[in-house]
Image (cartoon, rainbow, N blue to C red; front, side, top):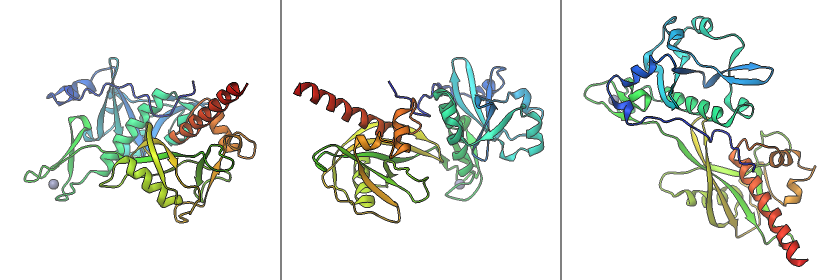
Length: 326
Ligand SMILES: [Zn+2]
């Protein structure tokens, strides 16, 4: 079964009750087993030996050699008895950071390296990157403009002004991504609608996606996005699965939806092109990018998974139909 989607195997126990206890976070941080994952400019530290990638972490023994801000360390959770943290390294002197950085390690773009990591490792790094980004973006209070301070190991920030004490909690932005199917066009054979942005590599087409807006359900967001981007009316929207997408802070919610119309009216500010694809076209040499995405072992994105699942469904239905006819 080809069901691997990057960033979807977070195994950490976040200890969301224990972390409120006074002194508990500090105790975990001083555990010799504690692993502190460094983040710098939204990049994760990894060891890369001939494309064999592994996660790199600091210990408190490393960090006491340099000056760091305790307010920049965030507790992620336990994997068995190992406490995992991350540290935002942006306030650390680059030379000092280099002095504790192990050899053959580099800060890397997670989107690029995730295909080379195990799913649990990509999930762990996504968690670290995501929480670090949220803290970066919320250093000041939105009510009064004073500095905020990380609390509960990073599960909250509180305004430092005594008369304000506004509390902020980590958030993600929900986005919908959908596979649109039409079974009534081109000889009543199933087709799916895929689009492309103008800055994508030649030949790349993918599922449509967009952010959920305030005051709408996720199903309404699917309907609206599809209508806005390609002018297609849809119904029977069914949730499939989700994927954390820390680029920088989304949660992708995947859907299948049924097209009631087929004529595409493109929103040129969003898309360069959109068209209907049959399974045969997706699997053909004419579209090598799509062919690769549905035939390799791994779904890097939820979009890959939705297209792959649709190809599987249509192919299976076709086989069953052929058997019936025999
Ligand atoms: Zn405030």
